[in-house]
Length: 224
Image (tube, rainbow, N blue to C red):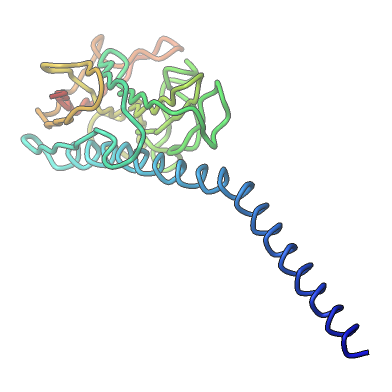
């Protein structure tokens, strides 16, 4: 009787050991890609934070007055994601940061707003002449995964204030100086070179044909 009980206990130990090893193997096999994906997202979040920092620095410099300046290093830091290109499109007032990444949590092939509430008066929509102060932001951050890259776009648009003492419309006006395209990462230098007010025929012409005076804060951008 004791011998049989001992045999049963031994078999039970063997079965439990096998089950434990089997579960551990399943966790390792299935958990490894999950961990890789999680680490990949952490790396991409680091690049995204750099893009957010650049946007915030441009806004800060624009509000600090003429002569204010800042620089932001955009090289991917210690993440595994390489910045393929930075491009300043000063005719439309946006900066594109293109990152080499095959996976993303955002919808593939379409623009998603990360900062800002609507797509009015943006290059991707061509709708509306401005946004209203207090209802949306003059600067937006967009992201679009496509193929093996992710493009982040910082864009500036017209903002209308009903209580403005001067020109009712304001805009941050990007001006490219020196390098406007970098192959890979770069240090981005931004400088507030002053404010210009466009009046009369030089003002903002609305889709209705009406013209509004517009104040432009000129931000010089240089990629080095």
